[in-house]
Structure formats: structure tokens, C-alpha cells
Length: 111
Length: 113
Image: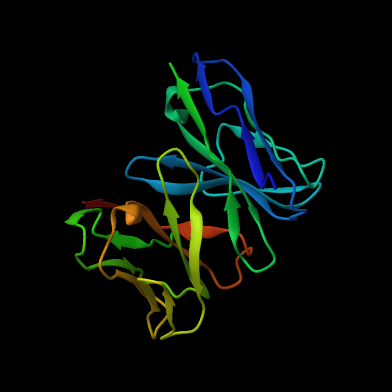
């Protein structure tokens, strides 16, 4: 029972590089989301999706793109990485009872 | 912007002590959740409280939702080293998308043997 799987766990980028954080869930959840977690800032919602083909912005969407072509996958793209995007990123999916299942996180450093 | 204020931000106690963590807001939430996060892992749900005044118990952990649905508390009795972690409260707005939780900044608990 994999739950929510994120890759990679660690990544170092140079300013201006692009990359995609992958997220997959095997629980057939419709709702998926991406959060970033920074010291002293808590978890902040970046983007979310209520189902395949539907995405929307959260609290801090700038600099990030998402797509939802399947129920299982919800990748997060950084088109031109900036040092301010250094953070730990969490993908989550929502069960019917309202419980969020989180992945183990992806630690990104932008130099 | 709705905010959830958690206090204290840090807490270091000895095994066997009791503690209370608070989560306060000026806004009303339809429900409130508590998560625990251990280093290198994602948050894991402990409890959801829905009704104003509701009290839920999970072994040595007692969760309460305020009567006005603006605040919540987590009380741990006889803390153990295994309780060490980051405790996060998260509120769900009325009318908001079911998964769009607003998180507090967390309380980092360290329980020393």
C-alpha cells in the first residue's frame, strides 16, 4: 500500500533551471494538492486539483505550474527556479472522510 | 487572510510531564484537524473535530474544539519520548474546497527521557 509517492526526495538546482516534482497516489482520490513548508511559515498551499483535468491556485502559486492528466498523478513544475523556492515540498491527496494523506516530501535547494 | 496561531512555537519537557498546545484564530472553521509530523516525513492526521465544544481522546492525547469553532487545544498527559514531533493544527473554511486546509505554523515538541 504505497499511498502518496513523491520523487525525487532531494534535489539541488541552479537559479534558472527547470524541474518537475512528481507525485503519484494509488488510493483513487480525486483531490490532490501541493504544499511547501518553510521554517517559521508552516505549510502553504501552492496548487490543488479536485479531479483529472481541473487545477486551481492556492495561496502561493507564483513560479509553479501543475497539470492533472490522470487521477493518479499530479506533477509540480518549476519553470525557472529561484533561491526563494528553496523549501520542502509535500504532495497530498484527500480521502472521502476529509483526511489528507501526505507524501514524504521533496527537499529542494536552489543555489 | 485567515490565520491559525499556534502556541507555544517550541516546547521541551521531561518524560512524564503534561502539556497543552493551543491553536487560535479570529475566524470560524467548519472543522479543525491536528497532524503530527516527524523529521523527514509528511504530516499524519491525528484527529478531526467538527462540532463546537467537541472533545476527542486518542490514548494520552485529548483534543478540544472551542464552542465558537475558532480555537482548539491538544493536551498530552504523561508525555513520552515517542510524542516528540511537530504538531500542526489545520482548519477548513466554510464553503472552501474540502482539501484546502489552512495550517498553523506548528508546535515543535521535544520530550526528553
